[in-house]
Length: 115
Image (cartoon, rainbow, N blue to C red; front, top):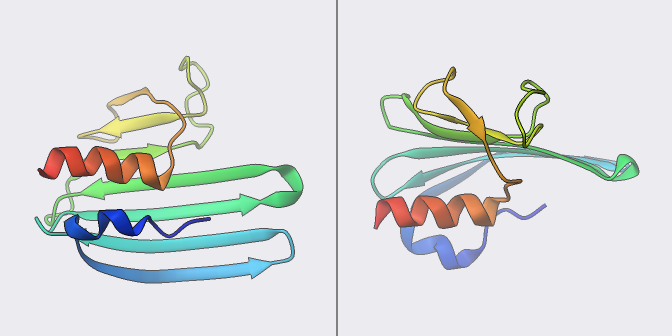
């Protein structure tokens, strides 16, 4: 698990670690990034090494809490061609296929939207 590449520091106003747990072969990481436009990215990553499993949720929202986009790999939409990988754009009900995401890919996308 990677917090985030420091190359994205120019778009980040604040970083707050919310949770870090490591037990045997399981790790949980949650943090919040506030960008220079005051939008917020909530990051949740869980690694289960014994199952070679990586679960994530990257929730980007406006300061008023309205959703911009959230990428996750919960098994909520088995009929999508990219299941379990998907994204919610603008609303929880607008669900589209997505490639597997990483914090680097998410920050690269957000960077293009902010600049």
